[in-house]
Length: 307
Image (cartoon, rainbow, N blue to C red; front, top):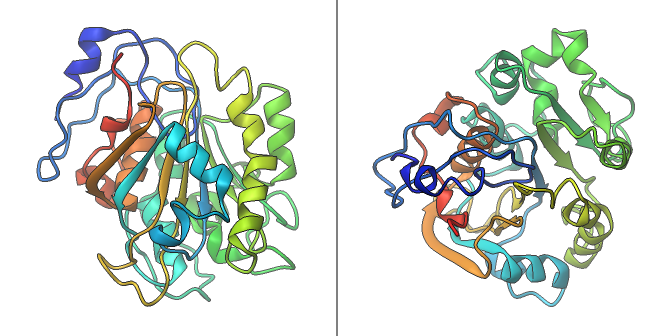
């Protein structure tokens, strides 16, 4: 699949998942699930962000009175009706979002992961990144569960590219750093945002998770950086559905995308999984190759307005 549609328009930079874009040409043609798109060096994005929520089905989230804020974002911007997690339990889905493979289904694992991953590609391309983790004990922490911090919800902390580099490890930061970076216009090119288990709907309620999103993430959506020329974009996705839902591996989950260049009020029935989100984010910041299954995953360009 090529990016010709947006190249012809050349009105906006591409794209998607939590980001700010710079002006350039972008584009695509009609989505074809069995014919993955070629990467496009025309895509030039400044910032991409993803927030991962926990363990609820699509039907328990979309349309739920417990999540009015997230549902308002979904209906105002866009969401996927046919998005599925890859596996149960959580950890394999977090790795699919960042390495393009499940790596392990052992949530208790603390083993270093040498597989190809998004950090490796970001560093190679000279891009900046941070993992903003609520209740992270300290900057650069790569240890196990600690208080409200859950290791297996923080995939970037596993990668050898981070554990074996004191420089890269400094990009594992407590979530409090997010508001500081936003206020100082120092957001990274790529950001992985991890609420704690009380705020991501794992242990707390959907209503609590919704309130956290409104309090902590809405400032990004309302910021001048997010709404500057070229725009910004954010993805909010659930890692997996209920354990009883094993459709396509991890069950039917909610996926919402927000930004000024998103097709307003758009929904898609196309089938996607976490590797497509990884590809989508990677292309947004101009990467030209992608880890694991992201290299052949269907793209998600249909969510972006060509107007």
